[in-house]
Length: 157
Image (cartoon, rainbow, N blue to C red; front, top):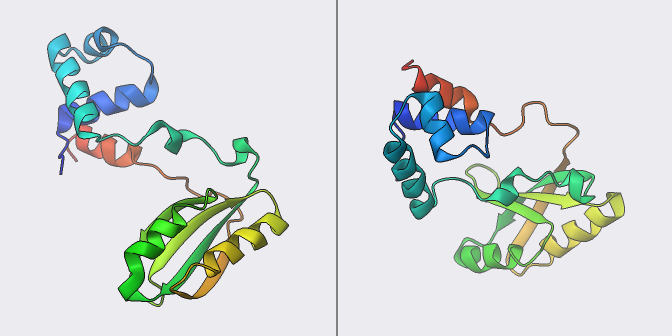
């Protein structure tokens, strides 16, 4: 597990502002040594600390205008094969193991309501899925973010 320090947080915030900045530009803006910046960037890349680029792409921009969250109750003895089969469904964009009434929370993207119905059917057809409940996302009230946490770390709060 990688722990970020204050300098890491400052560097990450600078990258949030200017994602295509060079190491030299970042070092100058942050008044850090170029080698320090380069080594941190290289370490993050080597350890795959940063999310992949596709995490930044909106499904809406790809034509998938609906997003839904499907909670699934599954046979616990078949959990890993079930998750693997969900990975074979392109419209499944994320699967999270949860506690509570359901076992998995599945984020899906769909072209329209008919497509969402089809995708929900694919999920329900996976062997070991016992039942599902679906909620359609109406809007992103607060999209995924870590910036406030980075700012807290960078400023030592």
